[in-house]
Length: 44
Image (tube, rainbow, N blue to C red; front, side, top):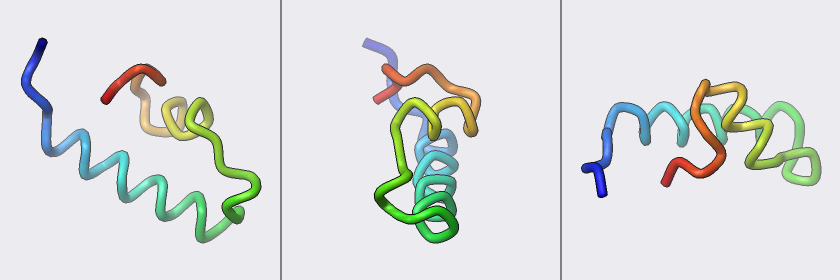
């Protein structure tokens, strides 16, 4: 397993917060988040 990229993880967290704040939790989805950040939905 590859080591985690902390910069990538921070970017994902920040984008998730932004999306939830702007669009609401009911409209939040992992696939949309992954696409917005430019990573695979399987990224952990």
